[in-house]
Structures are given as C-alpha cells and as structure tokens.
Length: 442
Image (tube, rainbow, N blue to C red; front, side):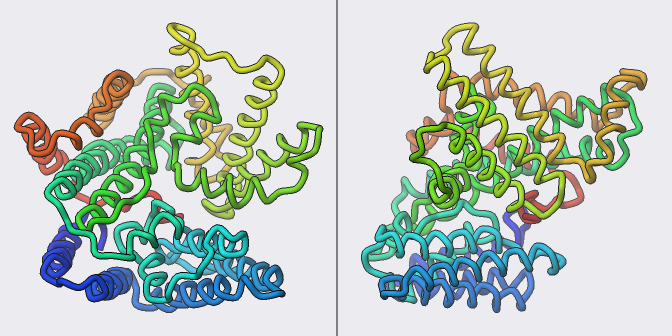
C-alpha cells in the first residue's frame, strides 16, 4: 500500500473510523500498532521481522543505557543498527521499504537515552508505536522520541481543525506527487537512461529532476504529516521551500529537515575536533557528515560524490562566512543569492541522478557539442509548462505562505474551491502508470 494508490485510502478510512469509535487511549494505540504492522506487511510479510527486531533491540539498548557499561552497550547497539542497514542496502533486493528511516529513529532513541535527553525509557508498547507509526514508516519524516512519545501519554481528541489541516496537506501532497513529479519523470527518465541527445533536452531533464525530486518527496511528507493529523498527532515539517535558500547552510535547513537535523545532532556533533581553535576540523567534519548523508542514500559512487559535493559547498560557505562575517543579502543581491544557490543545487542533482559517474562525459558532451535544440515532444512541452508553474509557485511562496494560510482558514469557501480544483487536476493529469515514490528506494 502506497499513499498514491487507492487501496491505501480504503485502509486509512477503515482505520480512522475505528480510531474515532474506540474510546480508550490504550486501545487506540493498540489499533494503530496493528494497523502499522498490517500496512508494513502489505509490502512483504518478511519485513516485519526486521521492524520488530529493530524495535526490540533498540528498546533494550535504550533501557540498558543507564548501566555502568552503558557506553559499551550503546556502541554495540548503534553498531548493530548501522551494520543491519549496511547489509540491507548491500544485499537485500529490493531494499526493505522504510528501513533507512526507522533505523535512524532507533539510533536517535539509543543515543538520546545515553546522553540523558530521555530521562526515563518509554514503555515498549508506546515505543513500538513510535517506531512503526504507519504514516511516516516508509519515508519519514524522521521523528525523535521526545517529539512523539509525549503525544501518546493521553488521548487526543480529533478536532475539525485537525481534519481540515489533514485535508489541505494531503490534497497538496497528492497534487505535487501525481501532477508535477510523475509528469516530470516522463521527461527525466528517458534522458538519463540515454544521454545521447540534444542540449535542450538534457537541460530540461536536469531542471525537471530538481523539481521532480522536491515535489515527490515533499509531497510524500505532506501526506504523511496530514495523515498523522487525522489521528491527532503532529509530525515535524520536513521541507520549507528549499529552492528559496540563499546559501548551502540555508538549503539544508530547508531540505529534508528531519534528516538534516539528525545528521547535525548524531553525526556532526559526535565527530572530534569541534572545540579546537583551528576551523579546519569544522570544515572536515562538515565534509564527513555530508559523505555519511550520501552513503545513507546508497553505497554508490553517484550518491557519495553528491554528498561530498554538498560537504565542500557547506565548508566553503562557512570559510567565506568566517572570513567576511555575516551580511544579510537583500533586494537584487538577495535574489542573486537565491538564483546562485538554485544552480549549485541543480549541479548536485546531476551527480545524484546519473546511473554511473562514467555517464558524466556523455552528459557534458550533449550540452557542449550536440545540437542544442531539435524540438520537444508533448511530454517535454508539458514538463516545461510544469517547470514554469513551479517557478511561479516559488515566487508566490516567497511573498505568501499559502499552505499555512490555507490551514489557518478552516472550511473557507475559496480554499475549498482551490482544494477541489487541485483534486480534479490530480485525477485528470495523473499518469496511467504508477510511479513509486523516489525515496522508497533509499
């Protein structure tokens, strides 16, 4: 069951109705645990062994983190989690969906228990729901225990405002995925499968992929956050218009926010040398952290190079900032900063999207030597229109946060009309062949 497939919505409706009918908080949580495991089993029943094993193992390590040998226990637990993730990414095909996300949540729990950020361990019952909660199980956001477990203490009444917020987020999320991302994929995939083409098609595919991956993943995140609101729970925001970022640090504060924060708190701050007088350690640690980010996406050179590229961008920005100080860009200078960061991000997506690094010369040859424009087909003209729409949305979002505004105006007739039009566009413009969410492969 995937968010963009009809069976999921039948499943969600059934679970939600039962959730509203059941009065007790414990019974409600039991329903969600059962629904989450049923949801995960729909992908492959054997995956349940991994999910249950990670849950039980990380819970035991977290509970044991207060003993005298807590460091040894922690190292063993984290090492086992990292090893399991490495084995899964290297040997299990297809990759168990969601394993990269719930393993990071388990590591965060173990480390937070060791650091004392969670004074008392959660009960196994609540912790099981924390790890397996189905709206975010397959692709995040990565939610920490101190963000989610307190919400499980008492029964949360589901209000009409929560239902409205869910409706807004789910509608916009499906629109991003089914209308924008999936249609752009039709123009992206053929070019990256065979870069022997014109420069205009390569450029279109490059920029289209930058928008595709954003709309695909942020669309999933919107649906996950909205679905959680149906049950009264709040998940953290995962995207904040990253292509409006003015520098590399700002980009990673806006892109996949839950992963960026996880890498900062559990990788970057754990590396040595941060308190040294020399800034070189900080720059090296930024590069190391982003290499870990690349490897987390997969043990392939394109991902590793992409991670290293962003590490160099972050280190270079921090070096310039340390030398020149902090100056807030405004007006045309601020617009120039945004446009420059957009181009740097797009260059990074080239490394991320190519199947092999050996294809990069073919890519460059198509841009520099092949005929630049040989015409577009219908799919490519559609992609060009969608790219223009994405640009307008970003220009509009820079002035007016329409998603937040829509959420803040429950059942407003104009917002309802926008949601209805978005829903109709989603039905009409959805591609016939379902395209899996991109981050299911990570």
